[in-house]
Image 1 (cartoon, rainbow, N blue to C red):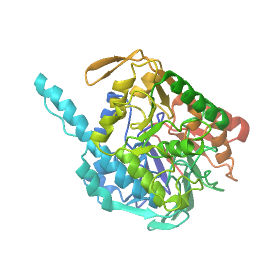
Image 2 (spheres, helix red, strand yellow):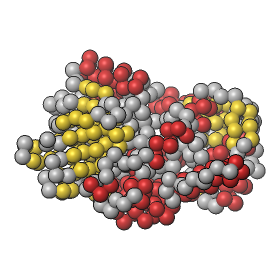
Image 3 (cartoon, rainbow, N blue to C red):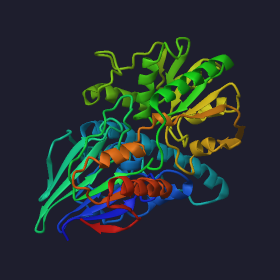
Image 4 (tube, helix red, strand yellow):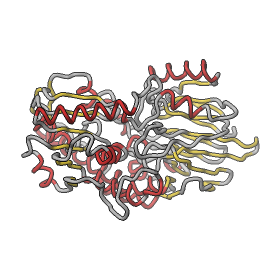
Length: 461
């Protein structure tokens, strides 16, 4: 064996990224992501890790999104004490996002236990706590783009910009062993060519094997200009109806894109009378990280020296009390809140107060996994339940596909086309329909030796 790869997450699905890389002497965990979606899917997060914790020598993360990093605190809670390598900005974002994830797990357990106490059922513990997440922060080791790091004897790591969110990385792993050198390239999540803030993904010229995401492998994003026009139409319609606009957004990436676009199109969209609320403590902190690492992208999201976006009537609502005051506003509010898939967070309170109002608009700007409330709203559900109460869905719902932070089919083909030696490529992080379409296109257009990864499948590189 020289280099071995096993697919243990995000194989045939888009959350829970986790892959095991083995050499004759060492074991690495590439990604340690949380499974998100239905209760049945999320229950799998409690399963044992695929390898004995004390046999894992290092963890490598491509970026900070919870479906790629969210089980690191659980790994540490179960005894892992080794390094967790990330890009520098990713390290800063994980210091925000992982404690928040722990807090949400605590709240989920608290809510579940209230029901269990009433029914005389045994209580549950949170998957991990805020304290667990804070305790594992010392394991993280920041790495700059294009810096070569010796992870272990015979193993080196280099990150290159993936263009997905701040700090997102393409992972290059090189192994030098008895059977020669081997190079594994993992795309991480690749950005979209028209991304408002981030740079285009870096091109890699050679590899012995490629692990590539395929989230939107079966579709093309609409032209960016059309997306801007559609958003302008939403604002015009909401202004005429005298309602509010709710935007559930991922706190890292999508939120900053939205703030930039609102700033850039402020006059064109005629939003000078609107109050813009970033109702997310974590989103506010993440935006501050974007200000500290602004040298990693080209867009002018902030004024020189400023820490918050250049937007009049902008409100960063950190406290619960500040958030609650938004509910008194019946018209003229643009409310950006998490979670991006409506699976929790402050967006639930805003849905409770607005989803039944026909004059209001819900704007979906990101991927919605199966089993999430966001997916049900996109699919046209007639009513939703929040905190045991039922609410009719009467607001207008818009799905804005052109704001995706993920590469579409053309972008994925273009990125793989940058390899000069056409290495074997294994598709992960995608639903089967998208993967089959992308694989067929890659074979037809690029003559690529492409396979769709199966859960627990092991390959030799």
